[in-house]
Image (cartoon, rainbow, N blue to C red):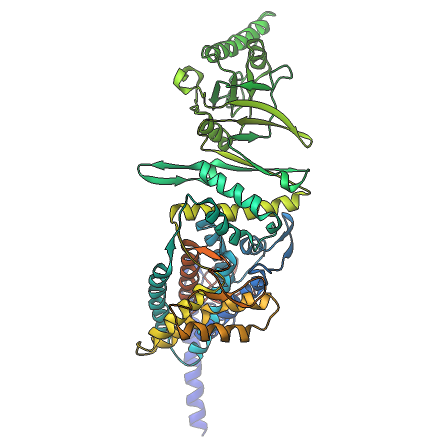
Length: 570
């Protein structure tokens, strides 16, 4: 026994000497090489996937009650102030999340809002439910690759089915277009003035629509401006086919009303050019200072003379306008407006037919805008606004919003952005599908029928997508205060009985009862519905393929390599 014990001790000492020699080997900068930090607790692949699923469910539960006409509002205190809204994107962008999976789910809402403008709440709820129903499949030992393959196959069939059940809409029928837009604002806070704002959104989109090389070009982000003026009643809001700018004339003696004005738009300063860096001027005689002022005056006078050659009535510049230039313009009876934003100048140029010029020497007669019918300065509330209206084919407009408070106007602005985006998508792709969860139930029934013909483990994932689509009508019913199980059971029976004839059955978002959506005139644009389903399913597929969360931290003292740890808290 003593010999065996001595033998073991010799082996241990030899092993220790070997380890000490390895630790003495220099790595980067003479330090030992650390491949992975084993201090944090290592999580298994299954635990990481389950945590990602739980995170997605948590984010979806935050805004689940904000879906449908009976949606509840969320009051959020953030760095931007107080926000009261039921818009999914507005809620999630104010939340501070740490978990990477939660950040990815929040980004889905932002992507949906940028792409189509509506369906931001729907896409989050769908993504959370799809991942929730993938959890039992993972626990049964099905590899995520087979789940993702089933989801991908289901997505292709869903896109084909959506186009099949959609139909075209007549864009010239204003009443039908108003019905479609009412469905978007029916879930918003401004539904008490739904006809007013639907008409404003429709008129704004029609105004900025133009055809370029046979294709429709609708840029509501650049050429539709929302001007919020607290005060008066919300019913005083209107669409102004032209431009409204929160600016007054630069000189008190200038005209405040001009009919059929000639407009020149500039992107240069009407001031004496200053040096880019510190500039020193040495004056040797007493008259040198007067000569310097005379040179500056001649420079500005030459610019103003070049502009006045073209007989303008209004001169608009994005830069400054000196007092001397204002004096020359005032004597000539010309109105000067200064320090405009680039986007405002673009709208004015498009509405009036002017061309923005970078140097006054480049001015030509064709660059002068003559399409504006009336220039007028009005006082709204406590501030002065310049109106450029009565334009011939303006192709730019301003939505003037009036209301009791800034918070209320901010919510109205968010709602108007949504309904304008929906109107734009209808103009670009005039195809509609049924709303109220009817499309989701019809699609789920189609997937169940096709699932029986799929062999292998992909069938379970294919079936899970069908079950996940029912979350939309179930949430609509739950937000109305009724028992969703009974309503979903009735809907399943209707769609299973005759999928073609009973395709229009869904949930009435006001009462929570089963009803026919075509009789209630509840429709949704095809592009919004297809984008919601595509974004939710593809994001779920990506999250299911994540098997480890690696935290890449910066190098610090005593830490010369990347660390791998479990996911951070949400």
